[in-house]
Length: 426
Image (cartoon, rainbow, N blue to C red; front, side):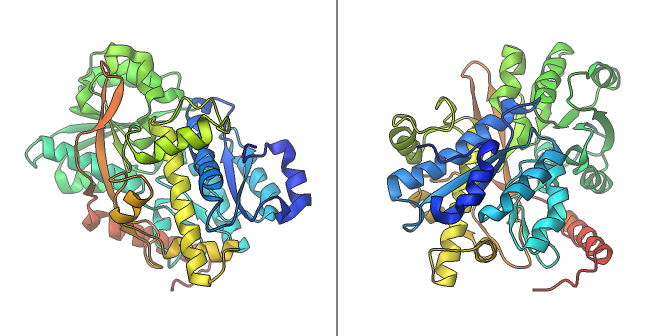
């Protein structure tokens, strides 16, 4: 039995209530639409990990897991509809995989006292748990990513990038606009010139942006793209012979889908990440045995070890570990969404814990607190090897520039609190 339910089956889940399973997790996925190629492997990794826990471990501390999957098509309106139609299922946490949906759900989940995890996306200032009590974005956020990119460029230039030109090619949406303020502040600090190049949804038309890049010759190009936009950008960069080692994408612009269409032209392209890559981890042998070979995979079972499958699996692992933390905190295995929130706020990921889960050195260590829902801001840089057909980390995990980011988080979250009548505090 696959532990997922299509949108058409939501009503049945609601009617049956908790009898179907003891712990329910939502999956607001998109297997259709212009971003399906990226949404599918993430959703498969997310669901497969919970299936592994059910098949190998009997669930989470004896409580079986049920996944309620709802198709959003990466459409904000549909995402909100999915939330409204599934929140009564007892879903412990929502992970919409969309910044637009996240923005709309922030007041809703807060009112309903259900936690939301926007892992590496969403509203960056939700890192401030004193204001955004039900929103979590650990282990890293978009502003961290912007800082990681600039730090990497600094490292390549002996710490001095004054006078350098950096262009940002970004999805013209709430998602793509997230890093702009951070990059502007970092430009003031380091003296580089920033050029902003928006790309309208879905991103298939970028000729004018890359003609401008060819004309102005920036030293580096950063990209905040998703779906087909990434493929087109990488191909356009190759077409104008932009040096791919100077082209750096955020973690949502760093999947196999983004680089394979360009073939050898994508060689050397870089992307940020907050988790490791490939399938050389003990947990994958268990996924193969208990899930794929057993015919219980959410998809075709051919995505294990790819960047986005790994990310979905990592999101599920963090959710499961937060659920265990909540169970320990409240002295019961039958936790509620409110208890899950407490578990997420007290989650600590250590190397010893990750190794015990079969994922040694897979992600950075971090500890969540009431004041800090976003982790410690560590990320790394990966690079694509077209000949080998794989991503590899080329740096260790390093921290973002907290001197710049902490005041930005404080300022933005304070403005949100004032606008919404929230009294910050723990």
